[in-house]
Length: 150
Image (cartoon, rainbow, N blue to C red; front, side):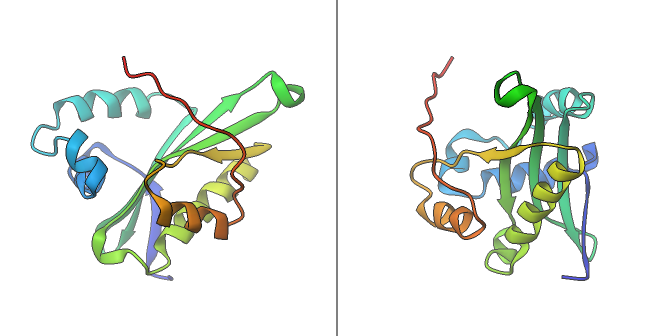
């Protein structure tokens, strides 16, 4: 994937990012690509936080993937730092191309470079293909996740 660039997202990337977030059965019910106002406000908060790394993958000037990497300092594990991978999306035209692997490997290497001790992520229980993908990359199912909608 020599023609691939992974870089920090800019506000101009929002339409492509939101389109990818909306382009699956779960995202289609919770995202609003026709109204970028709430995404712009969220982007400003993310972009202004040094613990947040929202990135896009570009190929030939086209945004084809995204993820957010969050650094969390922690008291547990002897004061370790963990990273959380969130919002992984690959453009429909690129699925199965190895791009997802490239993005996750970038996140792991970035985590190492910034001295994180642990990388974690969650995946919706219905995304069984994604679960197999993460397990192939070495992630282990270790916890049950819980959510409370507010």
